[in-house]
Amino acid sequence: MKVPPEETSRVKLIFVGEKLMVLTIVLTAAAVIAALDQLIKYFIVENLAHSGAVTVIDNLLSLVYVENRGVAFGMFQNHIWIFAVITFLLIGVFIWLILSEKLTGKLFFVSAALMIGGGIGNLIDRLFRGFVVDYLSLSFFPPVCNFADYCITIGAVLFVAVLLIQGGDKEKKQKAPAEGSTAEKTSEQTEESAEENESKSEQEEKPFAGKEEEMQDKAEVDSNGD
Image (cartoon, rainbow, N blue to C red):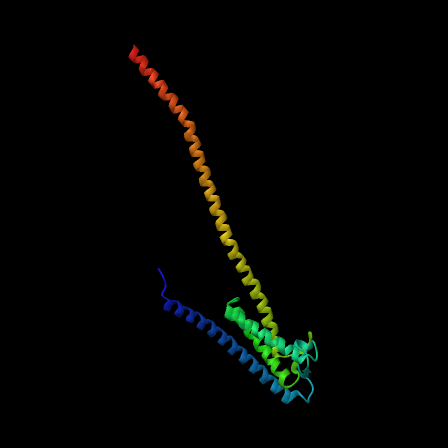
């Protein structure tokens, strides 16, 4: 039964609409993360730029104003435009992954929103300030970082988890048809061997059947002779 072209085009439009809706949700969540990051940085610049460190939790967390001219956690200093290009490329890759459905699932969408939002938050700093505002200082983790850095880090961890989980699922799906075909081949071989055994038994029974008939004929001849 042929599907009408109108129905096919309608299904395609629905499919594309769903992907665009997912992309819109992810980008909206990323925009909220970037806006929150900028709001926190604005507060830090206004209140901590010309003051010392503020202890939030003793021997654990402090707020310190730091101008970071590199990427996450202060690495690769003074490479603003290089990392701006890298950020745009990563955002483009995530958009492509969402639209092409190479990766799917809520965990992937959360990781994409975190990484895109964090990347945009730090990118705004690089483009308009020339540096990234860092302020979170943990006693057990020396580099001073910010909310966007942690979003990128958590998103990267989730992204790796998605790759491992969905990669394993794909391997299982690929193995399943192979195992099914092997089982089918085994059953076919079993049926063929059973048929061969039946034909051999029939062939073995034929000579005995012929001898029995000959013996019966001889017995009838003898009885008629008597």
